[in-house]
Amino acid sequence: MREPDYPSADAGQWAAVDDYFSSLLAPPDDSRAAVLANNAGAGLPRHDGSALQGKMLALFVAMTRASRVLEIGTLGGYSTIWMARALPEGGRVTTIEADSRHAGVARANFEQAGLTARIDLRVGAALDVLPTLEGPFDLIFIDADKPNNPQYLRWALRLAKPGTVIVGDNVVRGGAVADPESRDPAVQGARAFLEMIARDPGLSGTAIQTVGEKGWDGFAVAVVGPDRADAGTARAPNPG
Ligand code: DHB
Ligand code: MG
Image (cartoon, protein in one colour):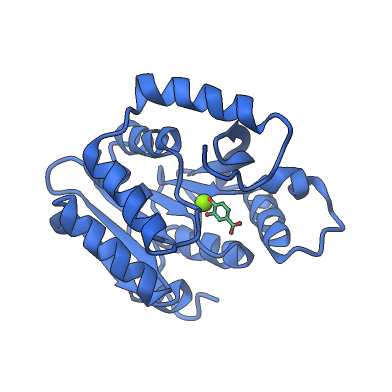
């Protein structure tokens, strides 16, 4: 069992259920096992998604019929590989990683998985890279440094189109998200992100708590409505 991000007396049971589900629905293959081993071996933070979360991202790609996917926060590329494998012929994941060492591990993983043609890895701080990208993307997965989530959502909307699905990881943080007094910048980032989704009449969203091998966390998912004013305006001046 991996160390959960948030310790709990129930962590063993949550992991056992994840083991059962993943043995059925997202069984390990040699290639994904190699990615996780490479990431752990390189000493990357243990923030890879679980196999079941990876499968969920792959299903989001299929459900949205996405061919252009944007990921903010590559780490070692485990989620990237799940999404890239789910793309149709000609589809592409653009993924942004701020840490050049993490990006090096991810690049080697993409080569080992035979996926370099489907993955466009951009190395740099996301807030520097995002203004250089051209949308629209069909699916946007936000999974980088959490304090910047509000800015990432702003950029996601400018790189979106009506119908784009935006997914934000790690919005529960062991329950800390419910504390309005929290001084944790990651919690503040998650709360501001959720409040932006809630306030935006052009977005419809929800948030789901999850337990499993990573402990107690969750994700938000939102869809861009038909006439959201700034969807697709990435080249507009002063995007803030
Ligand atoms: C953290 C980041 C992640 O992307 C994740 O999946 C779990 C935890 C973190 O920064 O704490
Ligand atoms: Mg995450």
